[in-house]
Length: 511
Image (tube, rainbow, N blue to C red; front, side, top):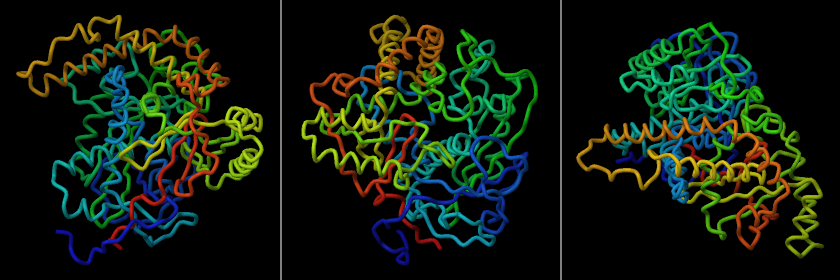
């Protein structure tokens, strides 16, 4: 039973920014004793490189950044959803809901305040503390660890898209070694273009103690041994939190010098254009490999949009000039304080008083320099996801190519698969599915040279297409010019994300 002193109160309304303490160090050691409150923290300086020195830092971020990390990290399940895209909604719910269910915020007064921070930090809420069973806590710890690891690597450290190491890692010649089921390896890998290094990454979450960190360090050592002579960095990210304490990160790291990385995506099939540092979406205009990577990263959102009923779809006006969204840190630009977005939306509302025809109004708005991103709420969550016409068209073309791969590959065609054997154990079934995922990934990479011009053409075509054409529906989605005061919106160059300000993690009872 939750104790009586814990108040029963509705979620509070406040801005969604909060602070995350981060401890950098060169090896796992004991968990610091409340140093996330007592140590003198350095302010986080930017998002694009590895800190020059170890020690305590603090970064102020938003719930929107965390939700973006949650929906984009983890195993790529889209190959399983080729014929059932509506289940993409369920996967998105699974990635987001544990965070809403078990996290809260509370005000903090650190011993050494840092100017510009929010004075709020994440913690575990009373539901987790008093009424959650161990198995549910373990599942929540996994999701928390993966989410905060993705956030740290991408929003803080400037890593490009992460990928699951289970599919074989960055070096073609080492695929079979990385795929050896006897090797206990880290979770993720990525390529940091600014550093010129591969990154091997292991994520831990929950009440992360020294024993759990040592296991993660052993996993990284095993992956590092396989990667061998290629220059790489190993990172062990622990997202540690207990009831009553602040959520903080430990990032234990090691640097291994050697040969430089291979060409984009690590496969060296046909060098077209290198992906530059940071967010893939920042370079879609000049890198075909970045376009392929961004489309793959957003495929889950694309499937959710593609399968949503027309009544749940709407479009929101966003400035078409991608360069106007100057991010101070992280991957997203909050829109509530973006003067250009507010001014252009106000102009669009004035235009709506004169242009009653929907198609004429859309044309007028686009002539003002506004694009309209397709969005829908992911039912079962408080998240609204969306994307631009150009990225939607690229995702659509990639989806068509993935369907073709499945249809011409005997191991992947549904009609060629044996019915599930009820006598097979969970491990055997998981091995079968992993083999299918790896086969699918190998076929995708083999198709990369052919995909580059196809996706580039689709991306360009999407910019001049109507949503009714892209959705293959007679009616355009509703154009939302009024806006929703209950939403906190954010955008990247090609995607949209909003959360309800009334359903952010409530302030906890632990002060």
